[in-house]
Image (tube, rainbow, N blue to C red; front, side):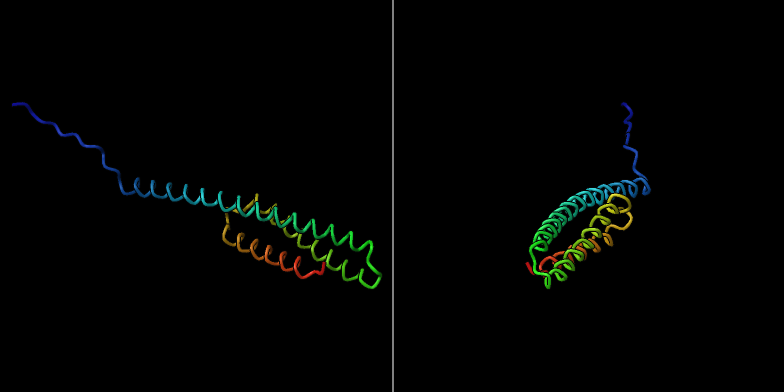
Length: 125
């Protein structure tokens, strides 16, 4: 009678299994990061367009405004320009160190976007 030889696949060590799980999780986080950052960047771009339009509209309005209304309109322009500068700084930051603190960054951007919308809506047309 012949001899049977059993060969088995080498079992993975616990550390190899853990490494694979970490790599899978890192890939999932990376995919989520890319998806969320792309969406947030798009939302930030839209907010910037809204700011630019409102600023432009207010500057046009300022030219024809009576003297007693000019100060309020200019204050609105100044406030929106500050918001635009904050947004631009956030966009710059997004490309630099966003991976380090995504959740905090996302929260800060959401707060900034909320403030922008409130300012846009609060300034009289």
